[in-house]
Image 1 (tube, rainbow over the protein chains, first blue to last red):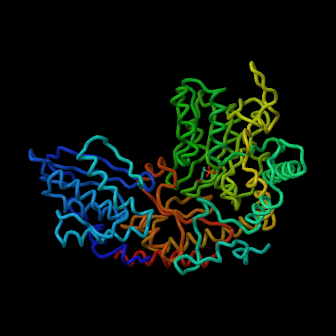
Image 2 (cartoon, chains in turn purple, blue; image 1 turned 90 degrees about the horizontal axis):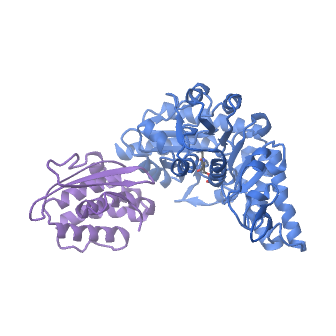
Image 3 (cartoon, rainbow over the protein chains, first blue to last red; image 1 turned 180 degrees about the vertical axis):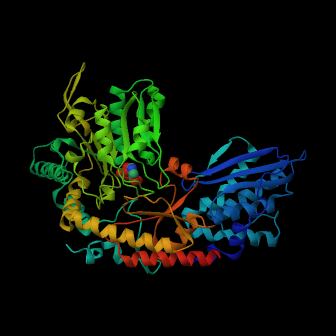
Length: 155
Length: 404
Ligand SMILES: Cc1ncc(COP(=O)(O)O)c(C=O)c1O
């Protein structure tokens, strides 16, 4: 158990100054996520173009440093990716947060992976895993648009 | 029993948390258990176990006597008039569900109003919400003032000719406000309205006297009173228990069962269907003995001193904002910190062995009103000391440093 691993500089920085905060202009997909346990809320906005590429992505939300940093880093990595690629990255991230040691996707560069791996500290804090995954589940739900509001359960 | 060495009575404090002494400040959520209670459960299962109220063999008779003995202890502890006014439930949640269900079924119809407050725990809102759906009743909320209190006037404002029952907390699990329940009950009764009190937070900290309060229903959670989980108590005036229909059906609660008809058992069996939390009930007698040994007056004094000390400490800490400033306050210190989410606070404090709760504490209505998604909450029990609060304060300062 190490707090420094959880609250790394990069997490504190993204938590304090989240990137891509706000409502993306001309978004055409969005979804809200809510963690009923702690009250964390996130709203993800996407602009997908005709080739199903993420032209723009942003989020609004209220939550702890982990959930804000996770949403902030996520939106940075997803911009410019195609829908299929987004899904692969989300799945890879969720697996890493739950059980796998590393990220396997080839769709992210080493720098990007390093950045994401900063969130892996939550693995030692089962109650906080949901904080890290809320925005990712919400992104999936925005893309699928099957379900508007998702309740983030630990699976 | 001396409060100075009381931690010794609780085996949990022998353990380290992340290599630190445990500073347990989450008693409003659930209290720790003294060894006597834990031992009693062990002894019952190893030496005396049997189901109660059914068989006539030696063990069954002995277990039944023990079970009923706790009922008498509870009656004395809360000064109820009659032993049969004590109903065991699986928790305060079930006690409130019982009343909402049985009272609602018999007495509420479309357009009737149930009056709650903005301070209520979800346990004292959701069960009433079901009646909105099934019966078309309306739910009103008496508002809090800037100090996080609900006053007699605030209740009075919301009483109408349609108010059929008032269900309110005795002590808020977020702001710590102690409501003027006796005055509220008097007012309600003058208008013919019965009152249910959610006593979860008051029962471990205040002297209880059902006859003096004159409430109709009082819900208690045993696991917050140094007792086992899976157990709660519903106190209800005898006339209500006689008049209300049973909540759950099953064995033990019936009198005569025919193919065409069923008659129900005497009080309080009518409301205790199925095999109850026998070991927990029997062990809860030890919790009451434990509380009596310390003396509720001493508990009140000790916790008030701690509360004053803690409030003063946190007030002087300029990165902390206390939530609520009630004149009459018990055992709960809720707070926020600038730019640090309560969840992050709780995780960082935990590293030092300081256990607090973060979130909405099952009070979303209140948090919405306060405009907060979450708060951090340190809550007190008999075992806490000023050192615990000093540790809380210094861990809060560490938190501030990490986020600077
Ligand atoms: C004010 C209040 N009401 C009700 C409850 C629910 O009690 P129980 O856990 O016994 O069902 C709690 C405990 O969380 C509480 O604090």
